[in-house]
Image 1: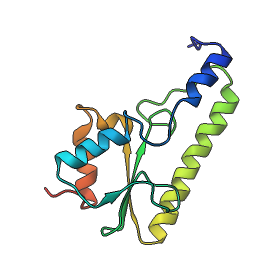
Image 2: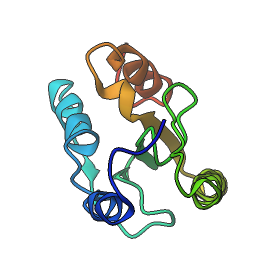
Image 3: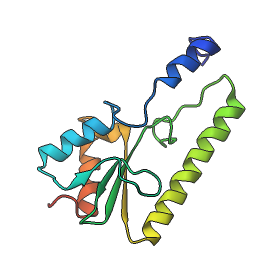
Amino acid sequence: MADIWDKEKRSKVMSLVRSHGNKATELRLIGIFRAHKLTGWRRKQKLFGKPDFVFRKLRLVAFVDGCFWHSCPKHSTKPMRNRVFWEKKLTANKARDRLVNRTLRRNGWKVIRIWEHELTTKGRPLALRKMRRVGLINQ
């Protein structure tokens, strides 16, 4: 599928994507935390990999991964233009995610990664299952 915008417009649009405070991801997860009365989380903590949320008492970090940027197996798409660049970029993102997970776990942290699509009404049960598995929420 061809891009609907020219190279300059696409670059401008992509530059607007923020790594923090994205309504489609982090702010939705905050809503889930509040709905389940979860407390003790902090944002923008200085830890390797820059986790989106840190629960220091639980030694747990949470990342919210966008389906495009982290190559979601269900929803990942690869732009047709500049394909070599995007293949390299998205492959590097996945490798960095694995390194961050490994490093944090070696340092005694539990790591949970929640996909963007798991924050929708339909996907929320999977996100809640992940949170239960790491002891973030009770049965």
